[in-house]
Length: 360
Image (cartoon, rainbow, N blue to C red; front, side, top):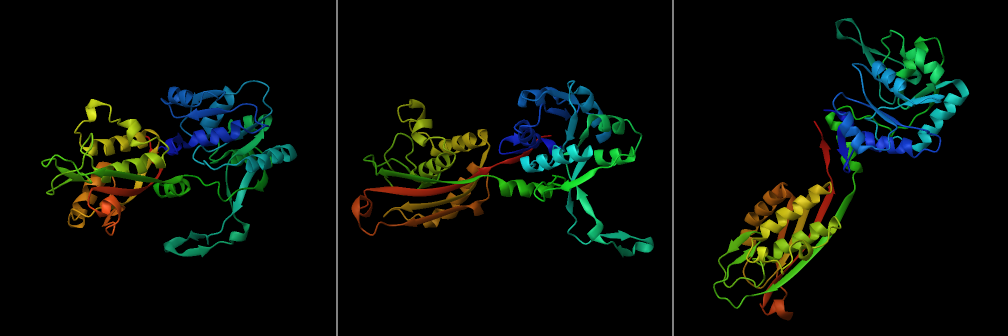
């Protein structure tokens, strides 16, 4: 997994971090050090970056290449892990203040888990965690301090370690527990949890056709009942309501805008085409369907005997599990046109969220 290129809300993780640094009033320029072969892609996605260069085989070499690419006149440098998307302005402020006070600074957070070392024979040895901290990024230093530190032949895993190996002190500043690093696939759940979630509402109603042979479709499933519903397409009120709910949740208009009844291409078309099109529209804007809850209002036919088939059909079109699709039915208790059996209506709610995708 190329962690820095995981997409969150339609943007790679590094773009989120880059924007935070670029908007900071004390940051003069920003740059990206990316994997070999991705420089053009990074430049296209981040034209605001001052420079984009290929990295090296190690973090130390990558930092050295990034430092060499910086424009002249830079006094201090911050180095940040692209896989830490939740860096904040306050954290950057604290690191900059630490650089001003001590020449180099590193944010740290207390270690909250019990930590043990493994001794001979697999024995566990307790370690006093009160003296332990976990280092985060951004780590920063005056360029005059960082440059010689990066030139060292050292096994240090971060800039702070290299600076200390060069004989200089690094000031610890308060880190941020929310400034997590995406390290394992399971960490992506934090991103999903932080993703934007929306709900949309859809409604449709159609009268029964005067054509006694017109077929009836509900939720993409054909019913034996005749006649079917009157409409430009197959008049599947259930799918039409679901499509409007999905589009409404993503603020992408409605079914009439995407598939107008003035367009002859949609005459007699299966409404599953509209549902699949709505799914593509959501995907194009970084959304994915999560759950559908629909209710059919009809005196006839009986809908629930085919509810499982409807759920499976809708789920297949949306690329989700059938357990995420709910279909219910009710009558209008004899009231109004629906109560008199003149047509069928459907209500639907759709829950969507931003997708989280790993780019290989």
